[in-house]
Image (spheres, rainbow, N blue to C red):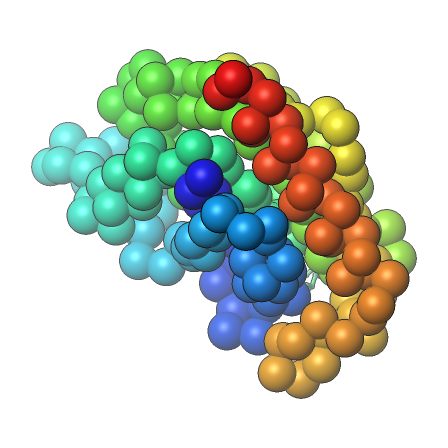
Amino acid sequence: MKILALSGALRRASVNTALLRAAAMLAPAGVTVDVRTLHGIPLYDGDVEAEGIPAAVTTLREAIRAADALLIATPEYNNSMPGVLKNGLDWLSRPSGEGGKLFGGKPTALVGATPGGFGTVQAQDALLSVLRAFGNDFWMGGRLMVSKAGTVFDADGQLVDDKVRAQLQQFVAGFVGFVHKRST
Ligand SMILES: Cc1cc2nc3c(=O)[nH]c(=O)nc-3n(C[C@H](O)[C@H](O)[C@H](O)COP(=O)(O)O)c2cc1C
């Protein structure tokens, strides 16, 4: 099984990208987790689109299409998802109708991490309304909202909190079970 893991953060030291890297390490045997970011995707502009979909968008689109499932890690900015992530999803939804074609029925799960105390709950909720527009097959069986991420990851982005590691492992296993069940 191939899971495309998309980080909504661009920072090199992003705790959300670190969370996805940790998920890749903890995935069950036979499951590969390919961590991607939104680097290189310009701001959505209809004039740019008219000249052609940017290569970074096409590359990411093909990777998502080829994956069995999608795992998104979203930071929380001002009680919502970062503009970078929404912008990436907006590009992936173009030309019109492409969002449903690409994401419709795609097994999808959300996670998020923040140094704050509320674990990206509002960013994840905001992202849900976008997934509803695309028709993703959203996994409702688990939630992972990592608070106080400053102590959960060390300076090298390694997950050093045993409780969160166990939660992440359980989350990934649950999602993988969901994806397996759909395909049998
Ligand atoms: C513009 C901006 C707004 C933010 N708003 C929130 C917020 O509403 N809730 C929250 O928990 N953290 C907020 N933060 C802090 C982010 O959670 C923190 O920067 C986090 O490390 C970003 O994720 P990353 O490490 O994956 O880049 C905000 C950060 C920025 C830059």
